[in-house]
Length: 134
Image 1 (spheres, rainbow, N blue to C red):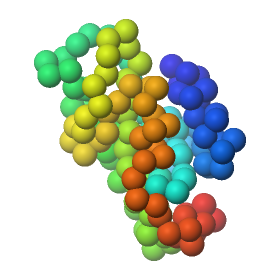
Image 2: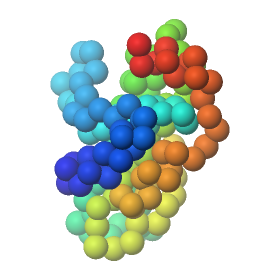
Image 3: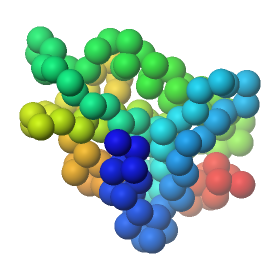
Image 4: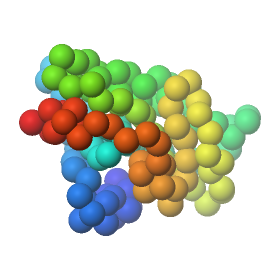
């Protein structure tokens, strides 16, 4: 599943986004699936396989809380270095359609929508982005 997401992110890396996979934050035991830095800020991207449809079609709350916590941890690590927005994106891998939505502060979308979402939004000042990657 993570390989499929990495394959979708590969062209973005070739176009200048900084794309990292299996990132471990200081003091954390678990790793982030993917971290993408680009003109719209920092995106913490996780893969989600939908084995069954939940009421309302949303992801399990524990999944949303976990990813939101990861994004908050990345923001905390960057705090003081750069003023870059950090956003969470949960990419659904499923035979069912994954409607684009926001759940508990986390964007949820189908894997194929990932590049468009990461590229959209207001641009981060270049100096701030360089600080985040330093």
